[in-house]
Length: 401
Ligand SMILES: *Cc1c(COP(=O)(O)O)cnc(C)c1O
Figure 1: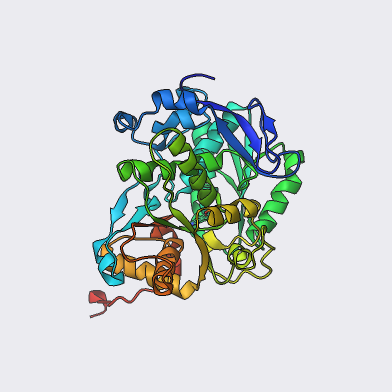
Figure 2: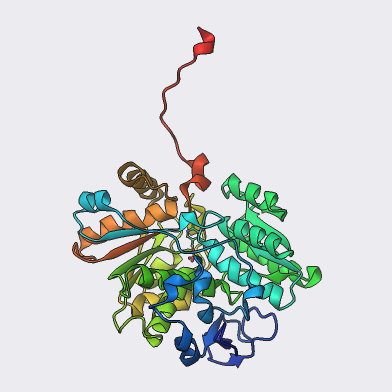
């Protein structure tokens, strides 16, 4: 324990069994995700809401509540501190008074995966990993490749054939070893798990690695900072593996323990694609875990996660927070993407579009009130999906005259 980080170790999310933080770990012995623990009293002594604004302009300003042992251990590209944009023209279109978009597209690798991989690679290097491997729908691979290069670690990335081509490019340019898999992300995960012992990799799969969630939780810290010590009423989050959903919910508990907020919590709304909605199905069936979604048909890669390792944590988060889970069609996502660009000039990804589309449905249903303070997440820049968007342009050809 030192004053830089109040991190004390890991805990099994099923049994509560605790582990010392002195070696590389994936899942707990019972096969469940591991979650980080902190000495909250120690953190509260120096992580003060009133002077945090003077700190470094990245998510590492919350270093007491992140696991890196000291400043020199941190692998950073300046991630976090993304804008929380008030969107008055979207508000008007929906008849709302308080709508915000947290624009994660401005992160160093163009998506919020920067946050998780900054912390994961920091800890992997600190704990002695020389080579990492990651199964990815795309954005996590791009981030893993970038942070691994920054750390001087070798990266192997396994990406489904149908992922947007930009992901192969960003991984290759960051010097990673890229393998394209003719299947879905869970097939990539199976290949990584199978080959890891022989390759001596450290695996960074979602929730199979304990520290990516710690990076993503900083989104909640930033929201509270940006709202001046308050929380929104509702958060809409495009959910694949559920890292951000679970991590932010836990973070609000930490923020109360730190004295930054009171008891009030946002309702956490899990947004998925109609063509791959294992958590929505489980939520609607009152199940505690989700089933493998057999035939994912959504084109939207960040939401193409048929198997959710931390499903029980996601479902618990949705229910404890009084939120809900909802699926929208790809068509609605792309329409909302256009709407955000057209009305507000924000170039969002279809996953971000999913949240705005879901908002429309939930307002109709009366699940969200028009006067509530609403935050929707845009999780990546729309530039990554350029090849999925049809454009209507006029052409002038002076050379053929
Ligand atoms: C990974 C990803 C998601 C899903 O994030 P989780 O926190 O794992 O649920 C959503 N949108 C985009 C763009 C992503 O890359």
